[in-house]
Length: 304
Image (cartoon, rainbow, N blue to C red; front, side):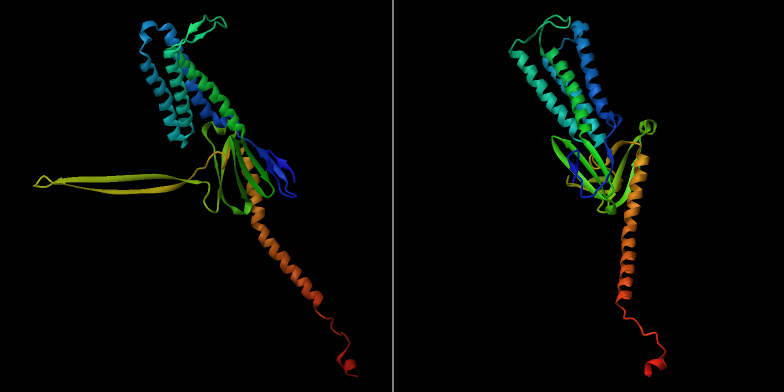
């Protein structure tokens, strides 16, 4: 047995494709980190050249630090249906708050380097530096997270795996795939990358979008007693949606990969029929071999 990227292939199993998401597929994560980095640069420039106009109390700076961190992360979490941006920014916010509090009680002086004079750190300077550092670390983590995705397509199955801190893997045999959904964004069509979502017979690979409505009313009686009531209603729609490690996310040439997977699914769908025909032919051959030979002499000659 052979192993590819920590995934063990079965006996006589042939590897067809070894895929990984392209860099552009995680562009939205890089954009969020870039937004934080630009905000940090703007903050440092405002403190350096703005003078007294941007010299605010340290707790104002701390509030601005949390607002800059949390609001974009909340928007990204809602749009991407992910808690990771918010969790990461909360960790960065806690670290920045601790450092800001430390500079209030302890004098920390940064030595002169790269032509920049030595400077005593204050919350007004340490908070944007923390924001810039968090953005740089985020770039490194995003790249490691992207490279941790691995998609193997063999002649028997599809293996979707992600290695980052821990390891998560999903395996789909071709005879268990009910549907294949290909999605390509505006930039994906021009840069030739997209996502393939394999939907299993159990429905894994589908999410739900829910919409609802509510109607309420209140009536005030003569004795100042208020009666209230409400009517709620809603519906959900099944949509193709899965985590990046439960789908072939952001792969190169998704149409070509989709065609190859479809061919494998088609061949596996025909396999039971072919096996049944082969079994019938084998049974007929056995019955023919077990039938005793008939005497070919004429009937009169046999009687004599």
